[in-house]
Amino acid sequence: MTVDIYSRIRQAAFEMVAEGNWPTVADVRARLGSGSNTTINNTLKSWRQEFLGKVAISSRRPDWPPALAEAFDQVWQKACDEADLQLAAVREEAEAEAAALGKRLQEAERKNESAEAEIQSLRHELELRAARQVELDSLLQREKLLTQSLEKERAALLEAAAESREELGRERKLAAARLDELESEHQRQLLAAREESERKEALAYERLEGCECVCTSKWKKSART
Image 1 (tube, rainbow, N blue to C red):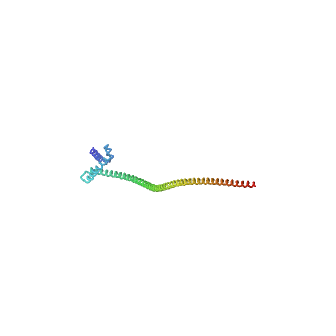
Image 2 (spheres, one colour):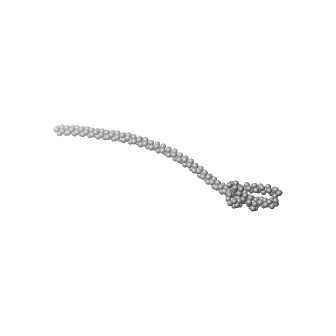
Image 3 (cartoon, helix red, strand yellow):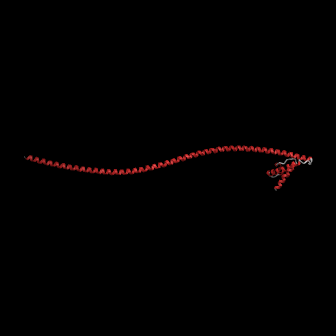
């Protein structure tokens, strides 16, 4: 099948040359009614090299009839003209493609510059965030140390307050005991003073009664005399 399509392409090319037309991919495909452009193009390249080689050799043979040589000259000229046209088309297409590629390259470079600027911006932002994170970590560490210090101080204050409460409790107990002791001593002193007062009062009454007896006795003796 593949050999058949190659043969058909070559045959169509010869027929078109015989008709005075230079075979192109589109013309050959239109004449065949089928076949891929790639297959036709590759086959025509090979056929053109062979055909133009034969034409170049035949043009150097003086024994050819003038009509045949003239026909070949016409085909040769038309092939050259067609080749020039195709070359110009190819060149124009290549230039257009190169221009398009240049535009795409410029667009790619612009996008690359934009992406690079964005990357730089993101890198700078990441550096700022990293620096901020370091600062936050430092603040957090200082806060942690301060919290630990305050916790230790609080524990020490609570311990001192507990010891103070215990000491105050002991001092209150001692003060209460001392107050009870002083109160008891005061009560004893009051009782002793009361007893002493009562004893002295009793002695005073006894002395008073003794004096009254003596006076009465003296009065009675004086009355008798």
